Image 1 (spheres, rainbow, N blue to C red):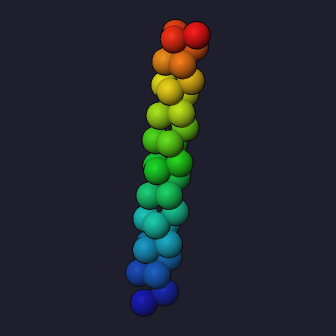
Image 2 (cartoon, rainbow, N blue to C red):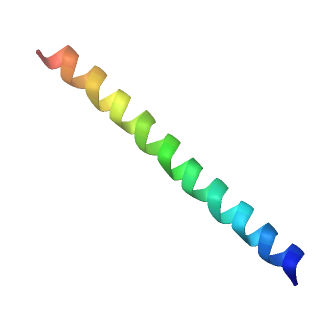
Image 3 (cartoon, helix red, strand yellow):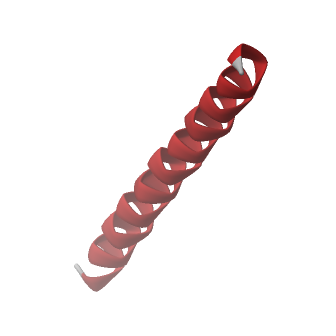
Length: 38
């Protein structure tokens, strides 16, 4: 039971980290595109 909970916590945390890294990638792409325009 405890092990399953820890596994869930790890999966949940890694999903949040994946989302965060995707957001930073999109932000950097957006900044690069904005620099090209200006």
